[in-house]
Amino acid sequence: MQPKAQLLGLPSYQPGKPIEEVKKELGLTKIVKLASNENPFGASPKASKAIKKAAGETSVYPDGYARQLRESVAKQLQVDEKQLIFGNGSDEVIQFLCRTFLEKGTNTVTAHPTFSQYKLNATIEGAEIREVPLKDGVHDLDAMLDAIDENTKIVWVCNPNNPTGTYVSEDSFFRFLDQVPPHVIVVSDEAYYEYVTAADYPKTVPLLERYKQLVVLRTFSKAYGLAALRVGFGVASKELISYLEPVRPPFNNVTFGQIAAASAIEDQAFIAECVEKNNEGMKQFEEFCQKHQLRYFPSQANFLLIEVGLDGDEVFQALLREGFIVRSGNPLGYPNSIRITIGKKEDNAALFEALERVL
Ligand code: PMP
Picture 1 (cartoon, protein in one colour):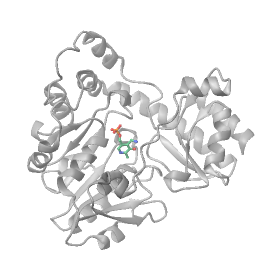
Picture 2 (cartoon, protein in one colour):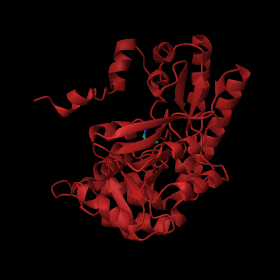
Picture 3 (spheres, protein in one colour):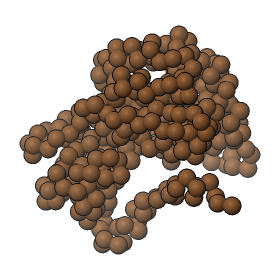
Picture 4 (cartoon, helix red, strand yellow):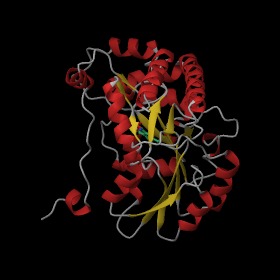
Protein backbone atom coordinates (compact mmCIF):
# COMPACT_ATOMS: atom_id res chain seq x y z
CA MET A 1 0.00 0.00 0.00
CA GLN A 2 1.27 3.48 -0.86
CA PRO A 3 0.70 6.31 1.63
CA LYS A 4 -1.70 8.98 0.33
CA ALA A 5 0.89 11.79 0.32
CA GLN A 6 3.23 9.63 -1.74
CA LEU A 7 0.49 8.75 -4.21
CA LEU A 8 -0.34 12.44 -4.60
CA GLY A 9 3.32 13.46 -4.81
CA LEU A 10 3.00 15.80 -1.81
CA PRO A 11 6.22 16.94 -0.15
CA SER A 12 6.42 17.52 3.61
CA TYR A 13 6.32 21.09 4.87
CA GLN A 14 9.87 22.40 5.11
CA PRO A 15 10.13 24.60 8.16
CA GLY A 16 12.62 27.48 8.21
CA LYS A 17 15.59 27.03 10.53
CA PRO A 18 15.19 28.45 14.04
CA ILE A 19 16.57 32.01 14.23
CA GLU A 20 19.06 31.08 16.98
CA GLU A 21 20.55 28.38 14.74
CA VAL A 22 20.87 30.76 11.76
CA LYS A 23 22.55 33.35 14.02
CA LYS A 24 25.14 30.80 15.16
CA GLU A 25 25.77 29.54 11.61
CA LEU A 26 26.28 33.01 10.17
CA GLY A 27 27.97 34.55 13.20
CA LEU A 28 25.29 37.23 13.51
CA THR A 29 24.11 38.85 16.73
CA LYS A 30 20.79 40.09 15.35
CA ILE A 31 18.37 38.68 12.81
CA VAL A 32 15.21 40.43 11.72
CA LYS A 33 12.50 38.15 10.35
CA LEU A 34 10.35 39.80 7.71
CA ALA A 35 9.18 36.61 6.05
CA SER A 36 5.79 35.48 7.36
CA ASN A 37 3.73 38.67 7.56
CA GLU A 38 3.58 38.61 11.33
CA ASN A 39 2.98 41.82 13.29
CA PRO A 40 6.41 43.30 14.12
CA PHE A 41 4.84 45.14 17.06
CA GLY A 42 3.63 41.96 18.74
CA ALA A 43 0.20 41.64 20.33
CA SER A 44 -1.97 43.81 22.54
CA PRO A 45 -0.56 43.95 26.09
CA LYS A 46 -4.06 42.94 27.17
CA ALA A 47 -3.61 39.59 25.41
CA SER A 48 -0.26 38.89 27.12
CA LYS A 49 -1.76 39.79 30.49
CA ALA A 50 -4.68 37.43 29.94
CA ILE A 51 -2.33 34.56 29.05
CA LYS A 52 -0.22 35.12 32.19
CA LYS A 53 -3.35 34.97 34.31
CA ALA A 54 -4.23 31.59 32.81
CA ALA A 55 -0.70 30.18 33.23
CA GLY A 56 -1.80 27.52 35.72
CA GLU A 57 -4.64 26.21 33.57
CA THR A 58 -2.87 23.41 31.72
CA SER A 59 -4.34 20.21 33.14
CA VAL A 60 -7.85 20.54 31.76
CA TYR A 61 -8.87 20.46 28.13
CA PRO A 62 -9.73 23.75 26.49
CA ASP A 63 -13.34 24.80 25.95
CA GLY A 64 -14.29 22.73 22.92
CA TYR A 65 -16.68 25.43 21.68
CA ALA A 66 -14.47 28.46 22.48
CA ARG A 67 -17.41 30.18 24.16
CA GLN A 68 -15.69 33.27 25.53
CA LEU A 69 -13.82 33.88 22.30
CA ARG A 70 -16.97 33.19 20.28
CA GLU A 71 -18.87 35.77 22.30
CA SER A 72 -16.14 38.41 21.83
CA VAL A 73 -15.83 37.83 18.08
CA ALA A 74 -19.62 37.71 17.54
CA LYS A 75 -19.95 41.03 19.37
CA GLN A 76 -17.14 42.67 17.43
CA LEU A 77 -18.40 41.47 14.05
CA GLN A 78 -22.09 41.83 14.94
CA VAL A 79 -22.96 38.31 13.87
CA ASP A 80 -24.73 35.44 15.58
CA GLU A 81 -22.42 33.15 17.59
CA LYS A 82 -23.60 30.22 15.43
CA GLN A 83 -22.22 31.98 12.37
CA LEU A 84 -18.64 31.33 13.57
CA ILE A 85 -16.26 28.39 13.39
CA PHE A 86 -12.82 28.54 15.02
CA GLY A 87 -9.74 26.79 13.70
CA ASN A 88 -6.17 26.18 14.74
CA GLY A 89 -5.24 29.09 12.51
CA SER A 90 -7.35 29.90 9.46
CA ASP A 91 -5.22 27.15 7.88
CA GLU A 92 -7.41 24.69 9.74
CA VAL A 93 -10.65 26.33 8.58
CA ILE A 94 -9.37 25.93 5.00
CA GLN A 95 -8.88 22.26 5.86
CA PHE A 96 -12.46 21.99 7.24
CA LEU A 97 -13.85 23.52 4.04
CA CYS A 98 -11.92 21.11 1.83
CA ARG A 99 -12.80 18.08 3.97
CA THR A 100 -16.46 19.03 3.93
CA PHE A 101 -17.00 19.88 0.29
CA LEU A 102 -14.21 18.35 -1.82
CA GLU A 103 -13.61 14.80 -2.97
CA LYS A 104 -12.60 12.93 -6.11
CA GLY A 105 -14.76 14.02 -9.02
CA THR A 106 -15.21 17.56 -7.71
CA ASN A 107 -13.13 20.61 -8.56
CA THR A 108 -12.14 23.87 -6.93
CA VAL A 109 -11.18 27.19 -8.52
CA THR A 110 -8.34 29.38 -7.26
CA ALA A 111 -6.29 32.26 -8.56
CA HIS A 112 -2.63 31.72 -9.39
CA PRO A 113 -0.35 32.65 -7.71
CA THR A 114 -2.21 32.68 -4.42
CA PHE A 115 -2.00 31.25 -0.90
CA SER A 116 -0.73 27.66 -1.07
CA GLN A 117 -3.06 25.97 1.39
CA TYR A 118 -6.14 25.93 -0.86
CA LYS A 119 -4.35 23.75 -3.40
CA LEU A 120 -2.63 21.55 -0.81
CA ASN A 121 -5.86 20.67 1.01
CA ALA A 122 -7.84 20.24 -2.20
CA THR A 123 -5.15 17.88 -3.48
CA ILE A 124 -5.35 15.79 -0.30
CA GLU A 125 -9.11 15.44 -0.82
CA GLY A 126 -8.51 14.23 -4.40
CA ALA A 127 -10.25 17.20 -6.06
CA GLU A 128 -9.21 18.79 -9.32
CA ILE A 129 -7.65 22.24 -8.88
CA ARG A 130 -8.40 24.86 -11.53
CA GLU A 131 -5.84 27.65 -11.25
CA VAL A 132 -6.76 30.88 -13.02
CA PRO A 133 -3.81 33.26 -13.62
CA LEU A 134 -3.99 36.67 -11.98
CA LYS A 135 -4.56 39.50 -14.45
CA ASP A 136 -2.16 42.41 -13.82
CA GLY A 137 -1.60 40.93 -10.37
CA VAL A 138 -5.32 40.86 -9.48
CA HIS A 139 -7.87 38.00 -9.40
CA ASP A 140 -9.41 37.61 -12.85
CA LEU A 141 -12.95 37.07 -11.58
CA ASP A 142 -14.47 36.72 -15.07
CA ALA A 143 -12.03 33.95 -15.96
CA MET A 144 -12.66 32.35 -12.55
CA LEU A 145 -16.41 32.36 -13.33
CA ASP A 146 -15.68 30.70 -16.67
CA ALA A 147 -13.72 27.97 -14.87
CA ILE A 148 -16.74 27.01 -12.74
CA ASP A 149 -18.88 24.05 -13.83
CA GLU A 150 -21.43 21.70 -12.26
CA ASN A 151 -18.68 19.86 -10.34
CA THR A 152 -17.16 22.99 -8.81
CA LYS A 153 -17.63 23.06 -5.04
CA ILE A 154 -15.42 25.94 -3.79
CA VAL A 155 -13.96 29.07 -5.34
CA TRP A 156 -11.25 30.91 -3.38
CA VAL A 157 -10.77 34.68 -3.41
CA CYS A 158 -7.75 35.63 -1.34
CA ASN A 159 -8.40 39.28 -0.59
CA PRO A 160 -5.88 40.90 -0.25
CA ASN A 161 -4.02 38.24 -2.16
CA ASN A 162 -0.94 36.55 -0.76
CA PRO A 163 1.76 36.93 -2.19
CA THR A 164 0.85 40.06 -4.22
CA GLY A 165 -1.01 42.15 -1.61
CA THR A 166 -3.46 43.22 -4.34
CA TYR A 167 -7.21 43.36 -3.72
CA VAL A 168 -10.56 42.81 -5.37
CA SER A 169 -12.91 45.79 -5.05
CA GLU A 170 -16.39 45.70 -3.53
CA ASP A 171 -18.10 46.31 -6.87
CA SER A 172 -16.31 43.53 -8.67
CA PHE A 173 -16.60 41.08 -5.77
CA PHE A 174 -20.36 41.51 -5.36
CA ARG A 175 -20.87 41.39 -9.14
CA PHE A 176 -18.93 38.09 -9.04
CA LEU A 177 -21.01 36.74 -6.14
CA ASP A 178 -24.21 37.50 -8.04
CA GLN A 179 -22.98 35.37 -10.93
CA VAL A 180 -21.54 32.37 -9.08
CA PRO A 181 -24.01 29.48 -9.32
CA PRO A 182 -25.70 28.67 -5.97
CA HIS A 183 -24.09 25.22 -5.64
CA VAL A 184 -20.61 26.80 -5.27
CA ILE A 185 -19.12 28.01 -1.96
CA VAL A 186 -17.24 31.31 -2.29
CA VAL A 187 -14.43 31.78 0.24
CA SER A 188 -13.21 35.31 0.87
CA ASP A 189 -9.90 34.80 2.70
CA GLU A 190 -9.37 38.07 4.56
CA ALA A 191 -6.27 37.19 6.59
CA TYR A 192 -4.94 40.75 6.14
CA TYR A 193 -8.32 42.46 6.58
CA GLU A 194 -7.24 44.75 9.43
CA TYR A 195 -4.45 46.29 7.32
CA VAL A 196 -6.67 47.25 4.38
CA THR A 197 -7.17 50.99 3.87
CA ALA A 198 -8.85 51.02 0.42
CA ALA A 199 -12.32 52.54 0.70
CA ASP A 200 -13.71 50.22 -1.99
CA TYR A 201 -12.60 46.99 -0.28
CA PRO A 202 -15.64 44.67 0.07
CA LYS A 203 -17.55 44.74 3.36
CA THR A 204 -18.44 41.08 3.31
CA VAL A 205 -19.66 40.23 6.83
CA PRO A 206 -22.88 42.31 6.76
CA LEU A 207 -23.90 40.50 3.57
CA LEU A 208 -23.50 36.95 4.81
CA GLU A 209 -27.21 36.51 5.35
CA ARG A 210 -27.88 37.58 1.78
CA TYR A 211 -25.12 35.47 0.23
CA LYS A 212 -25.67 32.05 1.84
CA GLN A 213 -22.80 30.49 -0.12
CA LEU A 214 -20.19 32.97 1.19
CA VAL A 215 -17.54 32.13 3.81
CA VAL A 216 -15.27 34.84 5.22
CA LEU A 217 -11.94 33.78 6.75
CA ARG A 218 -10.11 35.93 9.28
CA THR A 219 -7.14 35.28 11.56
CA PHE A 220 -5.47 36.38 14.78
CA SER A 221 -2.04 35.57 13.29
CA LYS A 222 -1.40 38.82 11.42
CA ALA A 223 -2.45 42.25 12.77
CA TYR A 224 -3.47 40.75 16.13
CA GLY A 225 0.07 39.43 16.61
CA LEU A 226 -0.94 35.99 17.88
CA ALA A 227 0.53 33.71 15.18
CA ALA A 228 2.11 31.45 17.82
CA LEU A 229 -1.27 30.68 19.37
CA ARG A 230 -2.95 29.53 16.13
CA VAL A 231 -6.41 31.05 16.11
CA GLY A 232 -8.36 31.75 12.94
CA PHE A 233 -12.05 31.62 12.15
CA GLY A 234 -14.67 31.37 9.47
CA VAL A 235 -17.88 33.43 9.35
CA ALA A 236 -20.84 32.31 7.25
CA SER A 237 -24.56 31.59 7.42
CA LYS A 238 -25.55 29.37 10.37
CA GLU A 239 -26.44 26.61 7.93
CA LEU A 240 -23.05 26.61 6.23
CA ILE A 241 -21.23 26.62 9.58
CA SER A 242 -23.36 23.64 10.68
CA TYR A 243 -21.95 21.68 7.71
CA LEU A 244 -18.36 22.41 8.79
CA GLU A 245 -18.64 21.81 12.55
CA PRO A 246 -18.74 17.97 12.32
CA VAL A 247 -15.22 17.82 10.84
CA ARG A 248 -13.70 20.09 13.52
CA PRO A 249 -11.68 18.21 16.16
CA PRO A 250 -13.16 18.80 19.63
CA PHE A 251 -10.27 20.71 21.25
CA ASN A 252 -8.65 22.37 18.26
CA ASN A 253 -8.02 25.75 19.91
CA VAL A 254 -5.81 25.73 23.00
CA THR A 255 -6.91 27.65 26.11
CA PHE A 256 -4.16 30.27 25.76
CA GLY A 257 -5.14 30.96 22.17
CA GLN A 258 -8.80 31.37 23.07
CA ILE A 259 -8.07 33.66 26.02
CA ALA A 260 -5.52 35.79 24.18
CA ALA A 261 -7.66 36.21 21.07
CA ALA A 262 -10.73 37.18 23.11
CA SER A 263 -8.73 39.95 24.80
CA ALA A 264 -6.96 41.01 21.61
CA ILE A 265 -10.15 41.63 19.64
CA GLU A 266 -11.39 43.95 22.34
CA ASP A 267 -8.28 46.16 22.00
CA GLN A 268 -9.04 47.84 18.68
CA ALA A 269 -6.89 50.83 19.69
CA PHE A 270 -3.81 48.58 19.49
CA ILE A 271 -4.85 47.42 15.99
CA ALA A 272 -5.37 51.03 14.84
CA GLU A 273 -1.87 51.91 16.07
CA CYS A 274 -0.32 48.95 14.25
CA VAL A 275 -2.18 49.77 11.04
CA GLU A 276 -0.94 53.35 11.23
CA LYS A 277 2.65 52.16 11.66
CA ASN A 278 2.17 49.69 8.80
CA ASN A 279 0.97 52.52 6.56
CA GLU A 280 4.09 54.53 7.41
CA GLY A 281 6.32 51.51 6.80
CA MET A 282 4.59 50.82 3.48
CA LYS A 283 5.29 54.42 2.45
CA GLN A 284 8.98 53.91 3.37
CA PHE A 285 9.07 50.79 1.17
CA GLU A 286 7.31 52.46 -1.75
CA GLU A 287 9.72 55.39 -1.66
CA PHE A 288 12.67 52.98 -1.59
CA CYS A 289 11.30 51.07 -4.59
CA GLN A 290 10.61 54.23 -6.54
CA LYS A 291 14.11 55.59 -5.81
CA HIS A 292 15.67 52.38 -7.12
CA GLN A 293 13.15 51.87 -9.92
CA LEU A 294 12.06 48.51 -8.53
CA ARG A 295 8.64 47.32 -9.60
CA TYR A 296 6.15 46.11 -6.98
CA PHE A 297 2.48 45.29 -6.67
CA PRO A 298 0.52 47.97 -4.78
CA SER A 299 -0.29 46.23 -1.50
CA GLN A 300 -3.20 46.53 0.93
CA ALA A 301 -1.55 44.13 3.36
CA ASN A 302 1.54 44.20 5.60
CA PHE A 303 3.93 42.92 2.95
CA LEU A 304 5.22 43.90 -0.45
CA LEU A 305 6.20 41.72 -3.41
CA ILE A 306 9.15 43.45 -5.07
CA GLU A 307 10.66 42.54 -8.42
CA VAL A 308 14.40 42.64 -7.83
CA GLY A 309 15.55 41.48 -11.27
CA LEU A 310 17.75 38.79 -9.71
CA ASP A 311 16.95 35.23 -8.68
CA GLY A 312 14.75 35.38 -5.57
CA ASP A 313 16.61 32.52 -3.84
CA GLU A 314 19.95 34.29 -4.31
CA VAL A 315 18.64 37.58 -2.95
CA PHE A 316 17.12 35.67 -0.03
CA GLN A 317 20.53 34.09 0.77
CA ALA A 318 22.38 37.40 0.40
CA LEU A 319 19.92 39.18 2.72
CA LEU A 320 20.19 36.33 5.22
CA ARG A 321 23.94 36.94 5.46
CA GLU A 322 23.03 40.58 6.19
CA GLY A 323 20.75 39.49 9.03
CA PHE A 324 17.34 39.63 7.32
CA ILE A 325 14.97 36.74 6.64
CA VAL A 326 12.60 37.55 3.76
CA ARG A 327 10.64 35.23 1.39
CA SER A 328 12.07 34.32 -1.97
CA GLY A 329 9.50 34.82 -4.72
CA ASN A 330 10.56 31.55 -6.41
CA PRO A 331 8.23 29.13 -4.58
CA LEU A 332 5.51 31.81 -4.60
CA GLY A 333 5.38 31.96 -8.40
CA TYR A 334 7.50 35.10 -8.83
CA PRO A 335 11.09 33.96 -9.53
CA ASN A 336 12.78 37.37 -9.75
CA SER A 337 11.07 38.80 -6.72
CA ILE A 338 11.12 38.79 -2.96
CA ARG A 339 8.20 39.19 -0.57
CA ILE A 340 9.02 41.30 2.45
CA THR A 341 6.89 41.90 5.55
CA ILE A 342 6.73 45.58 6.53
CA GLY A 343 8.77 45.82 9.72
CA LYS A 344 9.55 48.43 12.35
CA LYS A 345 10.75 51.77 10.96
CA GLU A 346 14.39 51.26 11.97
CA ASP A 347 14.47 47.65 10.72
CA ASN A 348 13.02 48.76 7.38
CA ALA A 349 15.75 51.40 7.05
CA ALA A 350 18.48 48.85 7.88
CA LEU A 351 16.95 46.41 5.37
CA PHE A 352 17.10 49.07 2.64
CA GLU A 353 20.82 49.56 3.30
CA ALA A 354 21.33 45.81 3.07
CA LEU A 355 19.31 45.68 -0.15
CA GLU A 356 21.45 48.45 -1.62
CA ARG A 357 24.52 46.30 -0.96
CA VAL A 358 22.89 43.15 -2.36
CA LEU A 359 21.21 44.44 -5.55
N1 PMP B 1 -4.68 32.96 4.48
C1 PMP B 1 -3.69 33.71 4.01
C2 PMP B 1 -3.94 34.54 2.81
C3 PMP B 1 -2.45 33.74 4.64
O1 PMP B 1 -1.47 34.49 4.16
C4 PMP B 1 -2.26 32.95 5.80
C5 PMP B 1 -0.94 32.92 6.54
N2 PMP B 1 0.17 32.96 5.82
C6 PMP B 1 -3.32 32.17 6.24
C7 PMP B 1 -4.52 32.20 5.57
C8 PMP B 1 -3.20 31.25 7.41
O2 PMP B 1 -2.97 31.92 8.58
P1 PMP B 1 -3.23 31.25 10.00
O3 PMP B 1 -3.36 29.78 9.80
O4 PMP B 1 -2.03 31.60 10.80
O5 PMP B 1 -4.48 31.86 10.51
